[in-house]
Length: 492
Image (cartoon, rainbow, N blue to C red; front, side, top):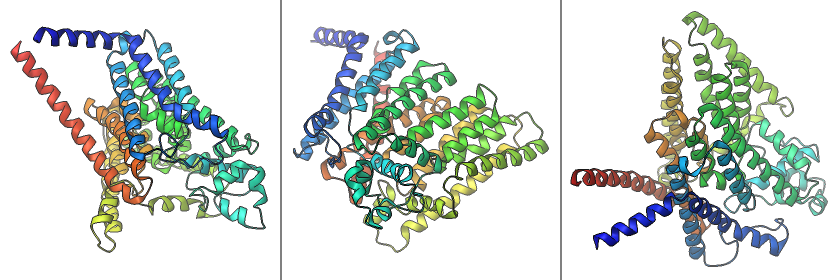
């Protein structure tokens, strides 16, 4: 019996070590992920009437069955992903092979329709409102434009605008920074008002951005491991390419800022890229003091203070320039509040559902925010007066701040926000790297909650519990494996 078990284990190990098998499995699982979307397009020819959100098979099949199929394929991708990383040195001879393989998988996910999010159609609708009709999307919503002066006629000939009009965010002014609005304007502008062309172009752009991020990670670290951790992660393919979220562009600008700071010693260029990141999503400003002070680490305290102020003002000026095309007054900043007033997919939802206490959510969030600001301020102050500054040590603090910001301060948590943590995992401890990768993958499994029940704020509670359970299981499995290994070593 023991002999048979040993033979089975050896056969499994042989299969695992066969690089072609692992890569083929990953490709096949990716194709399976794309099959429902390809089938939908062959049948309908267009995404104009696409409304099959949170349905993996994109049809009226039983939701539980669809969720099981989704989980099964995602599990295959996740296992193959883990094994490829474990056997990366024997699987890929050089970085070019990695780029090529990631490129192939990215192209497959370009075919996957955004069944977990409709944000892309809001992006495109806003971009079309700006590019084709000359409206300022920070002051005019898609609904405002269409419903004023009987502009409904445009919906028939402009399917990009029509798809944006029916979106849940169609009655909301832009909630992102001007750099993102300008990117949407460019892509929507070359779509000729055709939603299928617009979606394809956007997906191809996100694919190229994903590959660029892989290149930047390798240029910064010189290690295949981190390219694979980011570039071959099923989470990235789903959120960055299939669902076409803009956070992948923020990752690009943050990686570029770090690259020019560390490799080129060009602080001003680094600040420009950081400003571009902030002008998409505002959280990126948390990196500003660390970048400036690190660059000035060899200066005396007096010079640091003076230059921090000067470079800080330069950064503000660069960000202000990005707003020139759109700003009329401070109403352009309303998007920050619009996002923060919403509650989804975190412990705030749990509080909302189980504790009927007036102002509880607002007060809890305020306490966390004040505590965060105080700790962040004193961390920056300590860094300013620190004699020896090491990038690895300081960037780890940024990661911790981002984790707290992500899970405690943001009331409207979304799974694609986890992408913010990836530009800095290269300098983290092994445990933090594992946490970031695991939480990203767990979030995609947790989406099965919405595949079963559909989207709704109440489903944020089981989603949150699923996330917590997933983290708990991962942590305990690790301990079990470690104990098993130790016992095997002792017995041998």
